[in-house]
Length: 312
Image (cartoon, rainbow, N blue to C red; front, side, top):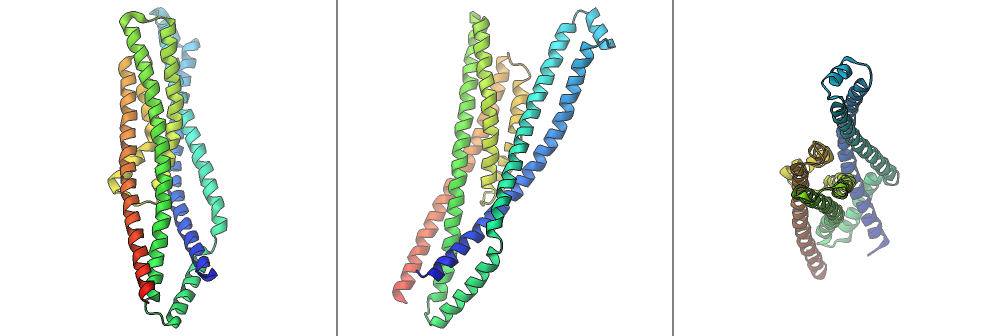
């Protein structure tokens, strides 16, 4: 292969990378709109909950009423719990918004090395076609077209590899959440059977705290997985499924914060994680199919090129 051919391949790779980055950038901008709206709404919710807490701690009519009926402390605890739940959800959305902004900046910085690559590739390809035509080799033009298809498929395989890696990370994170929820459920069962006490409560809530931290990690993995899928030809119904990844943490905390101590709430959270895990596996299965199909096409193209070279 000549240096000229190497330059053409290099430009092909640059053009393919630019298209991939553009697809990811568009997806990240869509994600940013979701999180920006989420932060806006959750900030209002949190501020309202904080205001409710402050009212109960002031000399308001509500404060006076709950003192009379002897429920002030219960009401204060309830309002504080709701404010804490709103704070956690707001923090989660803010972290994801910040992470998306960082990824957008990272992708934008890569475009400087790709400036003008499409024009350069078109010009190089035009010259290559002219050289092939002038060489008089009958199979030259066909070989060139097959090599273009081959370059695209190899680029697509690279994207599939990256997406599968992101999917495996998400599966591991989902399993970590499920493990902590299982432990919390076990401690809760022991509590209900009469083995309760401060140690049981601390153990259960310790596992729930760990589950919360793992959910934050999982949310980031889901977002990255969705971004990696952006430029891969996934079926429309699958794209609808992965769009739900962006709101996963919000749904998760809605279930878990309803009552930390009740076992069925832990079960609901387990169900939400299992559901998202199933969606990851669906996408991973589709990626495996695409990867295997690309391998077959690459093998066939290489055989065609070799056949043409031998007989030309």
